[in-house]
Length: 150
Image (cartoon, rainbow, N blue to C red; front, top):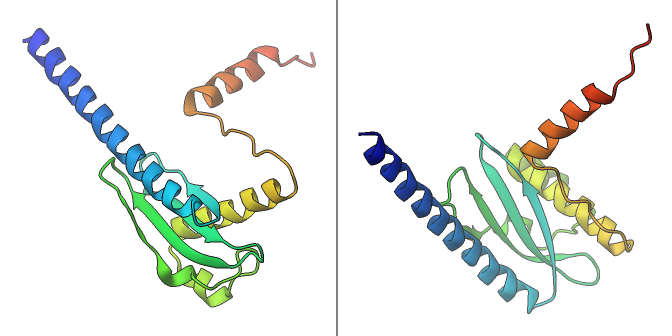
């Protein structure tokens, strides 16, 4: 019984890896298409239990958005779809009403895209966010390294 259960878990893990690969392949296809047309600003809003969002935006040299694609979902079944409500907006100074109409996850991804775009345009590099395990280990390191004042 235990071997059967381990086998089912292994099959599910392999299936999830395959679907994750399929999702990344879809993202890379859309990114490649948009990149061939010019600059692409990417913003993301991560979610472990809640929905995650990735925005891909074609931006011209004057910072105007020409095309937006959005991936939103909780599972590996999420796919990239057109998201036309931002087309024609200025990336750094968008129409306030358009931003208000976005759900909070899309708004967070848009704000992330603005931040990343500003950093890259200034010649900087965006730091890689810590994984949940890295965050956990950094908390435990801080606790071990703290000096008591007694």
